[in-house]
Length: 312
Image 1 (cartoon, one colour):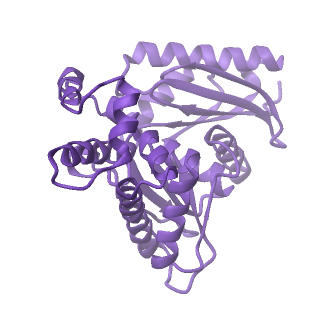
Image 2 (image 1 turned 30 degrees about the vertical axis):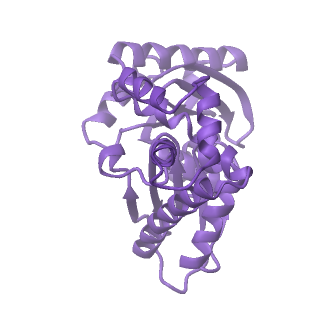
């Protein structure tokens, strides 16, 4: 049977998206399963979820496993040399004839965003990182140091700074801020001291702190100067990271590349996106900042198609 399909996978920490396409790039089916992060799940769970995902995709499309020519998986933390063979061995058990291409999940986000593996992607979710590729295939990155050493511009840092601002204002160390009202209302708290108990109960969960970042943007939209200052300063940090990556990959007069935004903070908040866009123009005048043209799972499909094309 002729092999004439590709599969793209966007493997996340909470859910995994998949798409199967023909060699013209037409998406035939999409599906979703649970987490396939190999560093936060047992390998048996990852393998079972990937098996179920591919089976659902092929069943929905009415196709067979033997028809899959290539599968590209964008997954967190597969940059280490030992990770790729592990994923490839998993896939071989249920897609034995398919070429398996595991890459970092940011790579498929860049492919989907720019429709090619050239440019810089800036991710602001729970954490933050910037990285990119140039036309020569060289790669560079900045950020991604985690919430203790870095994560500037991330949801975690935005929210932590907002919580600190409420405490500082309550002490009288700074002026009043709308963040106090917005954050206390969110928790149905009466006074800032109750935030201390909430923080202690979290036991260091950065995800739950980061989930408060939309409250910062709510305060920004209400014109709160404290929140606006936080957002502008953190957006400038992201712009500095993007500029650092761009400086490593592109000549100073090269304007034939773009910065793609990813992660909920830059994609969902118009005010944060515009603050980042403005900060980029100060550092990299003439470089476009855009939302992704396609989603990461579609980027994985594009990379799989490119692999097949280059293989000939």
